[in-house]
Length: 440
Ligand code: P71
Image 1 (cartoon, rainbow, N blue to C red):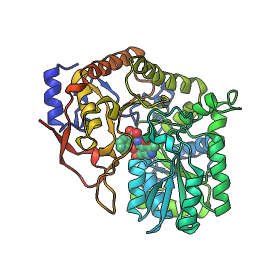
Image 2: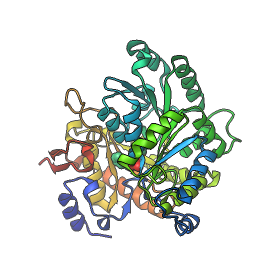
Image 3: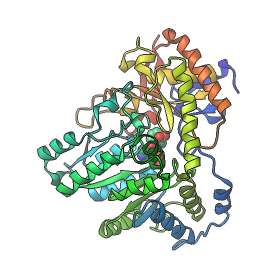
Image 4: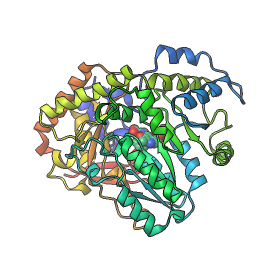
């Protein structure tokens, strides 16, 4: 724990950017659920069985078998984390001038698509951009939007659909199986592939089980497998669902694409049987995948997120509805309506929550959205959010109570919150390292 004076110094030193705080100055860390979950006794035991051979480690084959068994993809290339897989798939499949439609952007994913010469186009349903819409599947693709895009550009310009389960930037919102089936049908007609960002697929499966007709009695395991079966390949950051501190992979069903990927991985990550990971990391991932599709685990995980969300809803705090799978997202436009978007309301609110209690959160608004690569203007996303992300198997409900009390305290004093100006802006993924000052 720290005093308010200590936190004041720390946040100024960090340029009002929670990514630049030292973790020792943080009390409850809700920056991200990425790599921050607690590994189980089984995963730690697996770490002791690391086969650290350069090539053909036993642990690689365990990982490959787990992915084939639970996700059903045929070929896999391990990578150090999700963006390593995004780099490879983007380089292989995207040509300059291509269009990559997807159900809302993700920061690293879109950047790799752009660096490969592609242009990302959002085809998520409109409800996803409205924090108050209670649509049960705000991650759904608007199939009409997609079809008109195909008609305008032609299928040849569209290498694949970038399809996320549990749409992060929309608030951890799920896509329905009905929608994925519709998408599969449409893409088959035009010969377009679907590459699945399966970072939080098990959390998505939980919402399908609870909300989609006909799935209440299906296991998370079977729903996850069904989702994957409707896509052609996947990128995975195993630091989320799969409960490891580091790791990821690219999975493909097409052999020739796999051959290209296993060739590229040796340039950027490492040999195709370790992809930048230690043998022990791959073992922990294989075990984590197995644990991640357990019905009881996923119910407890999403249940904890709901616990915090319901507390905030009871206190009339504006959050994204319905409550998502991996965190609670405060609607900064409603929380601090006196700030203009260019005064970085969500960035400022995240700093304010830290100041109040030492709870660390993350901006997911205009700073995260970055600039349009053609015009160089800021993107002004409809959603200006502060994310309170819950690591898996780490915190107790008592921690959630502390968080809820702090958010309420900041909400009570919200009129005093001032805006920020950006004083340092890095070229890529600026939100990680940008610095700000308070507007007087
Ligand atoms: C999260 C992260 C980690 C992160 C990444 C970028 C900015 C801030 C925080 C990472 C994801 C993700 C999805 C849906 C791919 C990645 C990249 N999320 N897809 O939410 O959520 O994976 O971090 O392992 O490279 O805090 P990677």
